[in-house]
Length: 528
Ligand SMILES: Cc1cc2nc3c(=O)[nH]c(=O)nc-3n(C[C@H](O)[C@H](O)[C@H](O)COP(=O)(O)OP(=O)(O)OC[C@H]3O[C@@H](n4cnc5c(N)ncnc54)[C@H](O)[C@@H]3O)c2cc1C
Image 1 (cartoon, rainbow, N blue to C red):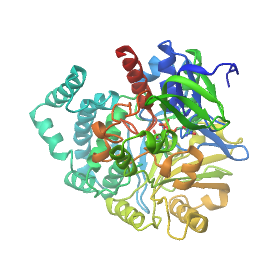
Image 2: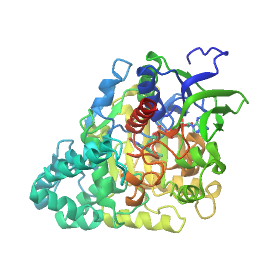
Image 3: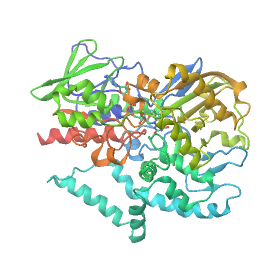
Image 4: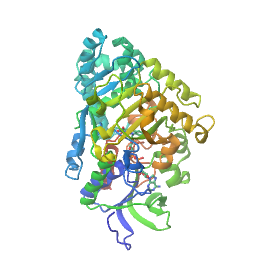
């Protein structure tokens, strides 16, 4: 923690929250010469991009566990590798597991290996190449501040024109296909192209990971394209494991922010945004201290930021209504296991244990898993994204021991019976699912930790414990994210900005929302 002069109570910019987006925002503001103070409530930086101990000697990326969306440009601009970011693995393959059958492997460059699915093996490269072309065309949409509709500003018009031009440049056939599939569901698209349930399930899982959807939900081709587009601009050649876990990304961002002159305070929760003359003018801390600032930027989720920290009394009724209706209930849980040894997954060669392992053996499996969550039940047969980070990064566990980290879908925010009662049964259900593929795993478990959406909400201070701070859906995306009136990082309250995953482009460890918000703060200052 950097030393802070107790006398200093005025900064150009105060950033609420030291998650990776708050840190990215702070770094860009400080590099532009602003005095910046980051206030983080927790004892640790990083928000949901954090590494922490969950059993004595065992550390894990407690929220996000794979990096695949952080843009190469941002990593380069902030010199994150110079600030300590190193890689335990890059360009990881995805291995999709099926009970009693050979696994299917998808490589980072469109490679595919599988057995008994000759027709799909031939069809996949063309599909992957086309999706890559779409991802390349859409990637700049994610990187930029979305345009505002119906304004006279040339920057907004040019931005919209640029989007149209990129799609036009795809050529007639691709353009038509993109427009055709854009609003479809993943189930219909994937069953058009492939007949192997295992391949369909693996691709469908990417469409619904972190969302409130099953593969038959409308808009899931959009969420698949979103993932691919963000991945397209990343420097990690697909999925990667930072050395030391995702916390290492946040540490590097903090290093960049500090080097540029930003101050960071831990264990400093903000209680209120101060408002004077209809403008944000600073913050009041939980301790009672007030700090004044020309701009206040919050990386907390939109509801917590605007309804909690600003207060509805400073916002108009229509805007408050839109915010209240923002869907923020998470459906993803996290399971962490401390293991005495490496569990052996049947049918998997030892070298493949370091891959991203997926349990989503068919689209119907995923849809059934999702169905439970509609009725406040957890999935009886959950879909899983499993990593064994210690295969590539032994520093996370005592010598010879291992960590298993799994994203689990679907776990409703509120489960029937309550999580206090259902936690043990769900943990057992997830371990049973893993044990179908790694039969000896139960005997290796020294400790386990399950984080339900309610736990994630508490640990990361995110309303609903949502992966994206708010659903990523057609009505909460791009030009209308999070809600009309707050779509370009600014809000109806002058001087108050949002910079977290609830803004465009959404969640995932990218740092783009933080960077774009910093640009908006600077642009607004230049205009006034
Ligand atoms: C289970 C799960 C698994 C995931 N897996 C992946 C993955 O593998 N890969 C990936 O790319 N993404 C993943 N994600 C998504 C990703 O973790 C998030 O989208 C991202 O970390 C959000 O970053 P952020 O900086 O916008 O917000 P956050 O990380 O939520 O940070 C917000 C920060 O603000 C602080 N804060 C809040 N209120 C206050 C206050 N009043 N005062 C001071 N500080 C405050 C919080 O303590 C927190 O540190 C996952 C998410 C979940 C929930």
